[in-house]
Image (cartoon, rainbow, N blue to C red; front, side, top):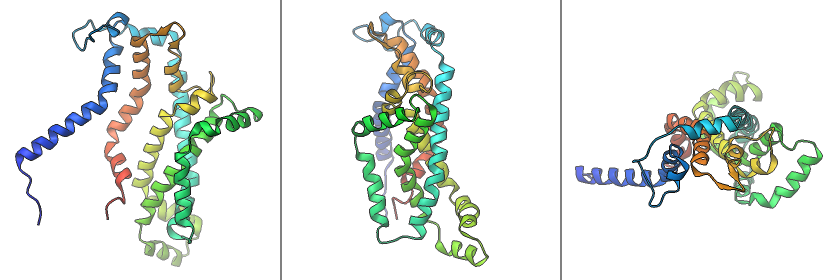
Length: 276
């Protein structure tokens, strides 16, 4: 019997949800507000929230001092490049595990997921030395490969979940019509899984865009993305919170806008297959 929900209960749930949402978003709200303050106002005690002289000088100073467009393009190339490369590898892998499973398929999936729990710092030295010996340090190519490897388990898992929802009879019908494996994946399976592939792409782009550990350790200038752009405003003379906040706001704004407009697809992708 369905449980009846009163208007008061719905209002309470809505109020609690808004409270949790504001609490989670508080660091971003604080950063955006601080970016419009002077340095003196930014470190004032007690803090000034809204009653201050709003200024765009921090954004002007950040743009004057740094080449924001170069950092932005590096972030775009690294996040999109690693996503496309990851999909090219993950789609056949997820297909084989979803439609041609073996007794070790589950173990392989769990092993791939367990690699995400490994501390990245544990493999930093061999990765750094390997890239240096190949002349790939501070290059977009190196970061595309590293970001792809870091996020590949998540891509495979999400695609595997989507592919499992596709009836196998459809693929069998395509085989009876003469479709080989390549045509089956490209012309039958992939179009049916477009929503899942789109959700996977969005999540991987966001993960690659926000990655800081590898970008800060493997780049200096040429391939430095927006995470390095933020770190460049930390100096031995101290932290200039207003300018640092302006740089952070400029770095996170593109991915926040992307996440806002694609939130339904992201939620659907993350929860797909969770409830049977």
